Length: 264
Image 1: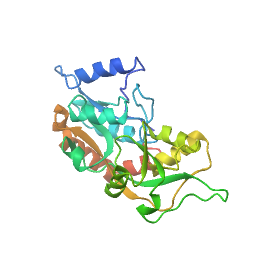
Image 2: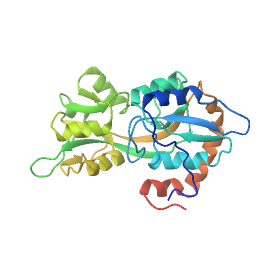
Image 3: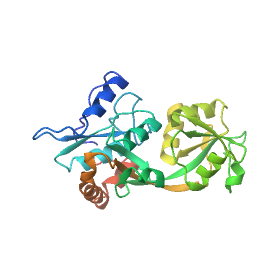
Image 4: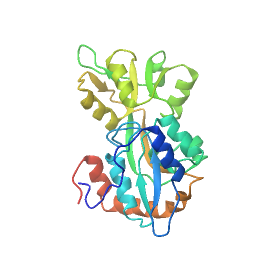
């Protein structure tokens, strides 16, 4: 499925020490050597698969971005996996080049330049089904007031939800990853979890917990982009990145990758 792309992610090595070394040399070029663009992030299956401290080598977003960089001769992408909040800080301060897939927010736009849209998903509210097999359903944000809701530290869930979480109207239980929060949901330590549709379904399957189900109504549609630090030399590649994304959309490649269909 990934041919003709050759993944250049390194073999598993030591944890954060070596990742820090990678960040320090990111953007250092030798004549004729492709620029390594370090796109940090956390594990987010099925978009980004892997373990914290290692490098992602698969996932929908990883496949798409590798296909983008295959069209750019002078650069190649790598995907170190670190906690999300740390990833944002690394990009803000120019210590890493960017993030492969994320939402656009006013705060992030201050220090990141964005590609055109990569993929669109939907944010859903996940719960443990009741004895009749029914998920928690909601109509208004007020229906979530007083609920313990699992959210990933540093994630954005849309302006209205972010406001309710920040104000305390919704009791935010912050965790390092979506998988951690889904495990908490199964154990009854939170009432609800907010998660992207594809991510939530993938985690429910991985955890083997058929009780985990989403509400029918999404909180919002989510348009995801590739983001590059305004302090990174990689930001100059953005026109080429956008042209490559456009070609992948026009050829139907991204739609097929999202649906899990084979792509030549």
